[in-house]
Length: 378
Image (cartoon, rainbow, N blue to C red):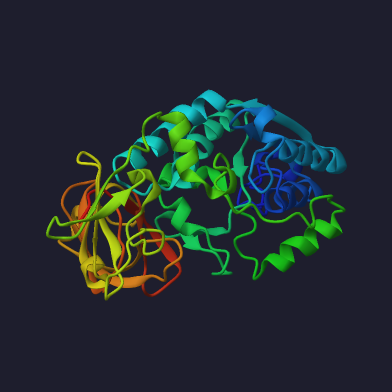
């Protein structure tokens, strides 16, 4: 039998014989992916996850997977003529993402629930569902690239670094990467995506990007946590590095490492920042900006995507991001086990917090080597 050439998804099949499950949030990015693949002749199956209470979602704008977003995804599927399903993942999402989010804040960490959602829901349960549907691969609207290297599929930053989502996808495993596709990762701008949406006649072409965490209305984390964990906003003391009481706070969940505004402390000569949270003593510790600086970052739950095993070297010289909004900086990565390591930054960074991710990059290319979770405070 003659070998078929690879299709645009890198599979040796004709598009009509290739089933693709597209994770559809109802936004313009995933809608364009689904429409693009449908136009190319693929057997597209759109799947949208209902992640939290549908009734509450209908009144919420600017968040993925809300009620009107489900309707938008269904409308795109109808326009392009492919099947679309809505799956109730409310219990899974609550157990895998929301509960940990609340507990992490109560423990004084600064969690990133979007990473956990990708890791534990979209790229785990939804991916398994895609396989149950006999799909050959699953595609998403994330701005990140999958490239084939000598050792197999590699993860790379998006061509448009302003849209790059590699920080939020560091925990994608090599096995998942074999199955996933990211058709938008090579685009140079969001304008190209919206132009494609107009070309396909999609009603979401001008839909605004979602900015909030989907289950946190208006970015009010504390209100969500208080609802999930009654009593979590108990007041306590604000103290300096020597333990001197400077004032009182309205609950640790209202504060994050590096915060300067909203401390309610006046009469000090120099600016002060939140440098540590002590949940057990219900204390917010503040100090000068230099107290925020650190060069050593302990990591655990590392997902390594290098060609060689993580522990094959005593140290790796790489670039790292310790927050999604910060540029990658040079560092040394020293393995302490298969899934634990310490990063030493060449230059100190301010405001590094437990619960954030530290993502690894090749300093000589766009390749992403995975990353780990910052797991203990300063």
